[in-house]
Image (cartoon, rainbow, N blue to C red; front, side, top):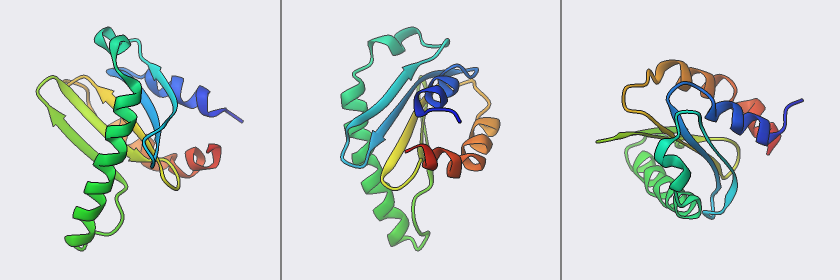
Length: 123
């Protein structure tokens, strides 16, 4: 069985992934890795990213509830210089993936959805 660190590093090594941060619902960093596509990712403030991920998830969850959409599973935020993908990884734990703007997100989103139960079991 793979460890959480193995899984995080495996995600970070996917094409186009710059960094992966596993954040608790309280905004604490559980694990992190930078990818082969890293570049500026090595200079990221991981603690700030984990804290902001928790805040984002709280607000996105409220939006989903107000809109009658249910619990938040995944959020894709497209920015000028890339994509921030936030995916639930178990009760109160979130994955933040920073991805290059030109990366095909389809396979990544599919794998995150398909492997969500196995990921939750690692936490």
